[in-house]
Image (tube, rainbow, N blue to C red):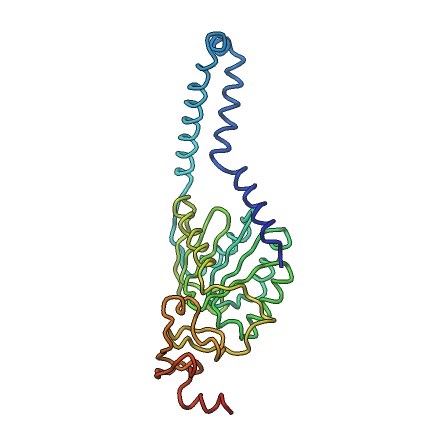
Length: 287
């Protein structure tokens, strides 16, 4: 697995170098340097050094405003449909400078897009995939997982995931489409491309919230449970474990013994943490 802390540090350095505030300071210094060489600025220096500070701050503010206006003028959003969504996903992967997020409950994209992701990972792009927990037992997902983790792609899973987001450093696609070959080729899909900073930041923040969720965990196929069960309180899909039949985030809120679903089949039934099965599966599990 990659050194996440080192990657985050490098990403913060790259963000700093691309920040509008950083460039505002640089441009302001350049302007002041040019003006310093002029007769007028030399006269200001002779009068009082404190006169320079308002000039610097004013220049900085003006440069910041201009950069903000230029950012808004070059930002946009546009709807995309069906096959155009595939093209946008390819472009998001190709145009990434530092990072890529793929948020899709179901994943089986085929060889073309898999190779494209692997290529970018080998170019030191930090790639994070977030998928639904029930994908862990599917052969096609395991093949995708094994190929990508070999190139340091990081996977996380969440049992409640329904969002579909494809995102790089500066643009994001929110869509109805899972990263599935069948969806790419056969389904009627819609989405919206966004690169306006405020909208992009909101989407990026949503992805961080998913990663920080109590339900989200780092995917590790080797240590994955061989079966999935149901939370006896919420009926959410969780790892099958008769000793822990309640989703952690649910248990933090409701620590009572009572449940209303079978941990094995999800059927509505009066269950408890000590006896999390319906009659049928309680007998089968005991056997």
